[in-house]
Length: 323
Image 1 (tube, one colour):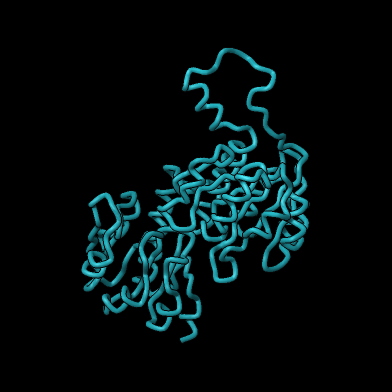
Image 2 (image 1 turned 90 degrees about the vertical axis):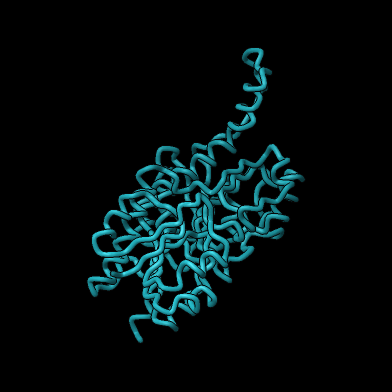
């Protein structure tokens, strides 16, 4: 039978789809495998369902001579060497669409938490410091009628922007090209990054991590933002230079930041943990019951597509089709 290795236990709905057609082996250790463990597990496998924490590089592919497809259990795929996979005629897929809404909603949760000091107020209350209503306690910033800047107007960025309708926000966005349908639906305006950072009250990052977007937001970019601005990142941590962000937050150059991702996950810049004007989450953008189940099903469906002789439905390295 077609042998599949799952690098970390995922919801059973996807696994049950595979079991009638595949021999499925799952890492049930409750942790990510070491590189040595992973390479040992995949040496006789035809397919692998990977996590964003798995490094799928030349060593990975060389250890798995029978490998036909890698189904990444994530929308991002910066953990995979696509050129190496394509060169070896190995299909790579991801799980877009199914996590769009949940990730966009999480970005809004961060926006609210930052603008209204939710985490600080919660800590204060739990510590027994609440003595009654106070005119000046935990004053935050308004959201309605403000300018929302979207860096990366893909599926998640657009969904995030559309959720702002009830707040009557002015929307600015950057992208590789204009999104005419998006503009018609939301009234969004296409601008350059410099303009977006200068004019936005809230900036939310939704761009994938590529060599071009690495440290896209650094010291110079942060200096362009308003002192009352909030920066949100639910994409990939390395899009922001964390050292520059710490400096900006310490000096009150921006109002606050909300982060679900980090430059060197799971390591987080220590100074970020000490600041009250940043909300830190443990990469939970897609963490809803339904989304994680749907991701499991989609990863399995990609493998079944391959077995049926079809093009996997969310193929990433489409250049493979030219060879």
